[in-house]
Amino acid sequence: MAQSPLPAPSNTDIKPTAVNSDGLVSYQLYINGEFVAPCKGAAIRSQDPVTGEDWAEIPRGTPDDVDRACQAAKDAFENKAWRGLTASARGALMRKLGDLITENADWLAAVEMKDNGKLIAELGNQMRYMANYYYYYGGLADKIEGATIPTDKPGVLNYTRYEPVGVVACIMPWNSPLPLTSLKLAPALAAGNTVVLKPSEFTSASLLEFVKLVELAGFPKGVVNVVTGYGNEMGNALVSHPHVERIAFTGGPEAGRIINEQAARSMKRVTMELGGKSPNIIFEDADLSKAIKGAVAGIFAASGQTCVAGSRLLLQRSIHDAFLDELDRFLDGVRFGHPSDPETQIAPISTEPQMRKIQDYVQIAINDGARLVRGGKRAVVEGYPNGLFFEPTIFADVDNSMRIAQEEVFGPILAVIPFDDEDHAVAIANDIQFGLAAGIWTENLARGIRMSERVRAGTIWVNNYRSTSTTSPFGGFKMSGIGREGGIAGMMEYLELKSVWLSTGVEIANPFTRR
Image 1 (tube, helix red, strand yellow):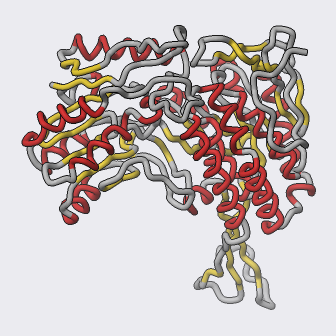
Image 2 (cartoon, one colour):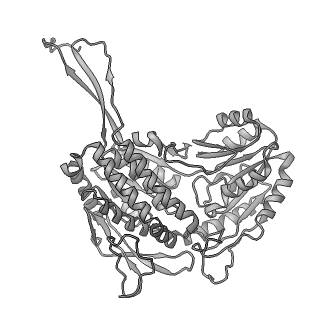
Image 3 (cartoon, rainbow, N blue to C red):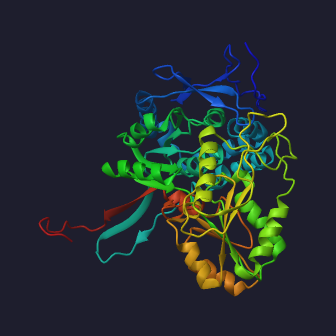
């Protein structure tokens, strides 16, 4: 058998995934506690974005595979092995999973890096922090309380209780597969639901490895299932499946709209995070040395492949030219390279289709009249001639009506827009279909508060950018989504509220009248 291109997991109880005769890691679906072949046996090849070479085969699932997974999740939800657990026992399982994630964080990071090309320095931190989702929601599992309601009806006790919704379908994108899975999976499990996970066809490997930890932690069979394949072949089957009660989706607004429409036909509840075009607003009184770093972190970290990217840089006119020059100089000499190298600052774009999209938007911006300050083309990186690297790109003279300012690119492309005062900045910031996040840079605390109240976005960062926590809710306004993930609010998305009326009276009231 050929040698695996992946490092061995830290825990020796985790079985390595098979490698085929071509040297490709060969994955299977995970249904009802078993790794199984898809019904039709087809596969999708996964590409390493650093080398451009295929390194793994992912199962190309079908609606029949979706049905198998949903049935397994339904059976597990009704089985006492899961349904009979106390909330405290569920929490203990989740904390065990958190321990396993911590123990195997470097291994998980290596798999995700191989699949989507993100910097190992960032992925290592993300994987270690990811354990906190399972610790946090594991601790929250037995702390969701109902209430006793003081009604105006004598002889009746009314109380409320929270119950799991049932089978949850979670659909994830390619940019951060495991962290975004955990944002959904951890609260769903803590609430007592069972889950069918569908990763992107571009980045399925890390989730298929991660589910081995779920099994090792001791979760009953069928509680967590993973199906892989193309969204257009499996998405409708998953969203419309009669066993699925809730859908949690992270992706683009076009796919989100389709999923929402499909879900509405059977009254399924949805939670959606659909991206953004976030303004990063810098006032003349800001600490400009910090704001420069905030601007870079906002758009060029993760090569711009993040939903909260500060892709619109709003600069107060009095500092516009000087700040833009300093930002341009700051990017001189940025280091491209293999994402496993801790010295690398710019990692590759994750997929070929995304690379083409970024290139298309550069031309769109030029055609619309934006001025290219730097970048705008693929980067040639020594040793990786086929790597999907793209230069950090800045456009100036951007009007907010241009497509480069209105549409999410999901790449290292920054649109710089001048503004005059607070009112002007707010008008530009809010003149967009999205409302996911925003950054505000000012040393005036009152201004920071005023702006945070006026900008319509689900997350506002003042004098920082991209800060997140398991304890804080995350989600968007407008086309950026529905519902919230993270914090207690994220847990409540996976619970149903039930009202119970218990008679305490001796007599039964007249049955022909409503009390």
